[in-house]
Length: 110
Image (cartoon, rainbow, N blue to C red; front, side):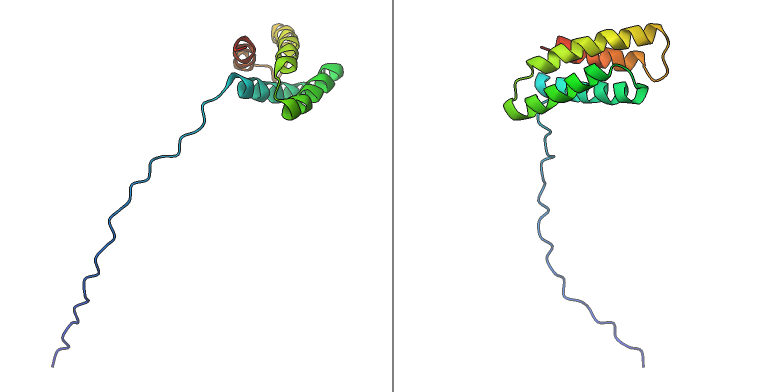
C-alpha cells in the first residue's frame, strides 16, 4: 500500500508591502566642508606637515559641532587647499589631484 501524500492547507501569503527606499538627506554645503576638513586633517597628519594648521582645523571642527557655524571651516579649508596645492606641485606622496579638487569644491560651495 502506498502512502497517500498529505496536502498541506494553502496558507494565504500576506500581500508584499513595498517599502520606499530610504532617502539620504541632501548633502548640505556645511556637511561637505566638514567632511573635506576631516579628510584634510587626516592627510596633514599622515604627511606630518603643518601641525599648527592641523590644530586649527581640529579646533574649528569642535567649534562647528557646538555652534553649527562653518565659517572657520571654510577659512581652514582655504589654508589647507593652499598647502595641498604646494604639496601637489612638489609631487608629495599621498596628495592627489582628486583630493585637491574635492577640497576646492567644498570650499567654493560657501
